Image 1 (cartoon, rainbow, N blue to C red):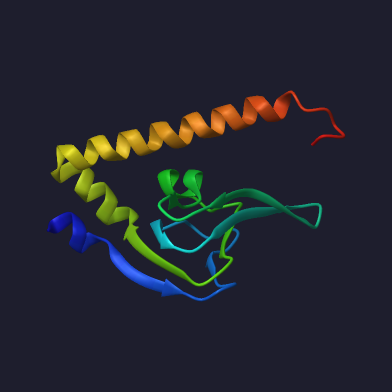
Image 2: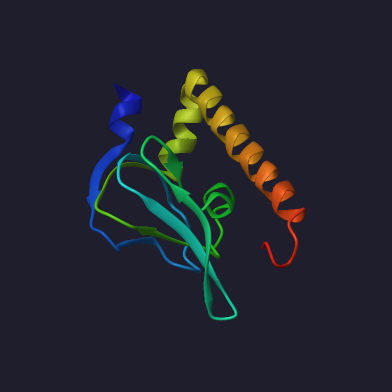
Length: 130
């Protein structure tokens, strides 16, 4: 019951920004329904980092884990039904419940593996393919 109570259910409108560039990612979100895009700006162009679908967790990972300003923005591409947990509550659950700590480790491993695979695949593309 404690873990469930630390996640807040929210509904977010289409095109609403969950996180703006240079803001700190204070929340980790779970997507129950909807589609979310992470992106950043480079030379005035919007560059997509990732799309997140139903059943996935989303945040600006570096900003969330380091509690530093984000270079990314997070936008709902359609109305989204989300569960969110604050960084402080997330850390407290890790400290208080070993099972949640294991979940947090597995989530971080999954994200790290995915990003590592993406980076390596990207590095082999030609300039034209990129």
